[in-house]
Image (tube, rainbow, N blue to C red; front, top):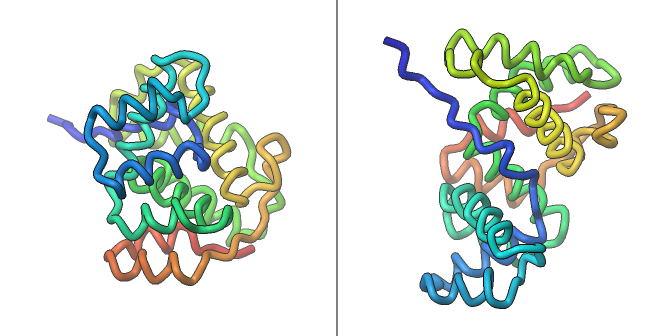
Length: 199
């Protein structure tokens, strides 16, 4: 019996760097549940229209960041925009094997082949292949797959692998040396290899 599941949260949102800095601060301060409620719901620090939206986003970000060590939270909260963005990308890769494998199998191949841009169909083809490992994917609605693809290309654009989500034109990304050190020191060489690619 095949019990493997990708358990993706990609439809939960893209990198959300500004919001992630706030969640990282809460994690670093070991905030109580009351303090989480005060800042996320009462103070609306994530600046969302409704309390339910703020709770949903904070939960998604927290589930990503809690997979990383406090040194990543520190870099996210206190680092410049580039470093914070790259840490957010790490958190999404750590949480989403689907995205990690897409980076390894599709994006990396495109870089190695010196292609100019990605194509929308590549995400859908990739999901079809993944359906061999996780049959649940085969039952996903077409709209769900499309939405997830939109989020994936937005993430890659926010992380600077794509010039923009619309054109999907590939560009080089220089991984910050302090982030490389953190990834190597926490035995995330696979994740680093998926990010450290060149045209």
